[in-house]
Figure 1 (cartoon, rainbow, N blue to C red):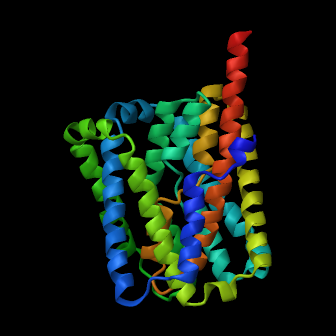
Figure 2: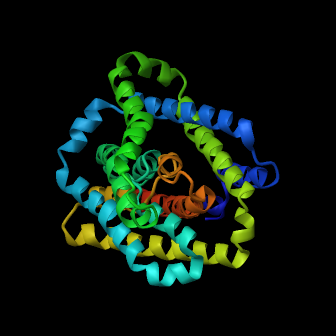
Length: 326
């Protein structure tokens, strides 16, 4: 338990990026160059994700449409509904801009790598997790901007058109992903020889985006706007949201008659939100908005979900080991 609760290297590095941005933010011409490098790194990351994903796994996973429909409902219906219902409580508690970040987090797709990894550890339906998590990210490139346009930016920016944002997100995330799929026969053999490559790009690109986002936020006075008490309330709000969703992702699939393997897949894919896709989307969607305030909720939620899912995945794995020994 203590080992699971311990912060991993990536979590520590995220905090380091926030501290570094707080004391040494990148700005001016350097910020523009850094932003360009970050954009290229994100495109490379999604190219590698596309090359890594097996087409056989996609075909096998697509056959289980009931599982994917339920995960889709949790990701793009339950989360947004809970986020919208929480507005009367969260706006007075957190302020309008942090609430926008909280709501944006609710509109995001599921994670890919961690959903698959936790499903595998818990011995769930891995093929279903691969397809469901990937499909969630692909469809999220279109659904998330529409939800943001209607419920957030449509109210703050008169006449906001999400079409341009969807095109930018498609070019940045979806096109490299498709190219990776097309070039998979040539690229994947080299990736097998360098298994840490995707993880490196995954983590380094997120760290770069977080540093850039918080740099601009610090320059704009982020830490003069967010107090320790507000930060604590945001952590509490994220924890309550995750608890509600996890309870429903455990009991609804069981009530609907899914087997245990699929129940685990639905739980891990339906209860999480992506940081890897979320921060680049925020950069595109919230131009001119306080980006640091927008990405802060997903950063906090991301860490909480990883710790809780890690504990649960290991617990379910040990339960299976005990049963197999009996």
